[in-house]
Each structure stands twice: as structure tokens, then as C-alpha cells.
Image (tube, rainbow, N blue to C red; front, side, top):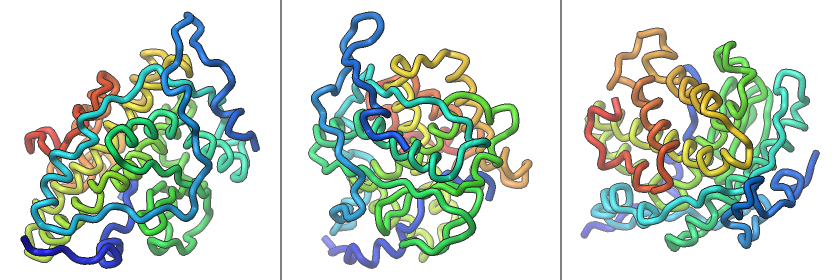
Length: 315
């Protein structure tokens, strides 16, 4: 088989994975002290030691052979694992409109502790190295390892394996959803979904495939690959919510608001119909809501295998 390129060249292509919205408390404070639910059922993953944020993580896995592009995305070892439920996350709600950037940054870095308590054991069970990214809240368009950071957005950067959050992102959330619980946190869990893809090799394998489609002028295939990556991150975000819902005392109404959030960020919805289903790179409102709903309803990570799903489900 033909050998693949080096990880350095791949990282030039695997730059940013973001939600695309259009176009201080310590870790113990975030995770809490209790080891059981109010009903007496023990939380899962309590023996897992949540690591500190890692600003110098090991390199992400990159496929060496072309045949791995398909096996790493469609038959990845992560799909054989289930997410634990319920998992403890005692993260307080905050009002993003009245909270300083530094406090928001502290809050989101606490959130990654909850995300790691859910995803760290799953990644390790599948044989992967779990990495807890830092979260940086920024203003303007600062330079990052992935180039200039966009305003009104959040993104995972594979160049340094960290997550970035623009301080003006909340204003892009539809007004009727801005005050709803876990809305911003669900967006960040989507970005963490890209971090999971990075640590499992899915992100690099898919990026190389997209690069080859681009060079061959196969625009529809390139867009399809992008949608499969993004809708998978939607589904993984929902699995996190499902895992910590009992701890956070989320209601079915809260979950319905989150489904609406992902629908509203669909390519066709956010563009006011200028992008038709199947013509964007993140997924239509119906597709994104559908994959988020699938994640809420299952602990099997294979449920989020968008790469074997029919084309009609990732439009």
C-alpha cells in the first residue's frame, strides 16, 4: 500500500473544526464531591482521575496508508465502546451575558473536567490516549496554531489540540434559546467531539480524504465528508449530555431546547435558505437535530458512526 504523508503536512489541512454558527473555581468545584445520585444509584467513572488541561499533548494519530482512511473513520475501535451513564458533573449554570470573559473561561475549563470524566475512560478502553484540552476565551481575531481565530464562533484546533471560544459567540444563539440551560455547554461538547475524533484518528483520516476530494475536484464528496465529521460531533455532544443529565438535573424540555439549537445551526437554516440540504459542509437543520437526538437516546458510541450512514441522513 502507498505510504501516507507526514503528520506535519496533514496538520496543515486539519486546521480547524468548529460549529460554524453562521457561515475562578477549581476542578473539584466543577465535578463536585458526591459519589452517588440523589436516588442512591452510584455514579460511573468515579475512580477515573480527571487530568489537568494539557497544553503540550502528544501528536494526534495520522494514518500512514490510504486503506486506513476508510477503516479509521468507518470501523474505528471507539465504536466498540459505550459511554458510561450516569456520570457526575456538578457544573453550576452561569449567565453568559453578565459574566466576565475570565469567569467564562474558568467555567468552560471546568466543563472539560466533566467532559473528560465521561470521555476519558471510553477513549482509554478503546486503546487511545485521552487528552484534556485547554479552553481559551478570546476577543477579536487573535493568531492561533490554526491561523486567525474567527469571531462569533468556537472551534477545536488540531494544530495545538486546544479549544477556542469567541467571547461574542452567545449573541449568535437565537434569542429564545440564549437563557436555556446547557446551550453554550452543548456547543463546547460539540468541539470536544472533534477532540475525540482527533485522538482516535478519525479527524486526520477524514481530513486527508477531504484533501484528496478537493484536489480531484470532487466538491460534493468533500462537502459530504465535512458533514459526516460535523454531525458526528453533534451526536457525541448529545451523548455527553445524556451521560451527565441526571447529575445536572436536566429535563426533557431542556433536551428539546438543545435539539432546537442544533437544528438552528443547520447549513440551510443559518443561511436563511441560501444553502440547500446537501450543499453545505456541516449538515442541514434536520440532519443536525436528528444526529443530536440519536446521541441523546443511546450510550453506544457506534450510534454516532455517521461515516457508515446513508447519504440521506447527512444532508
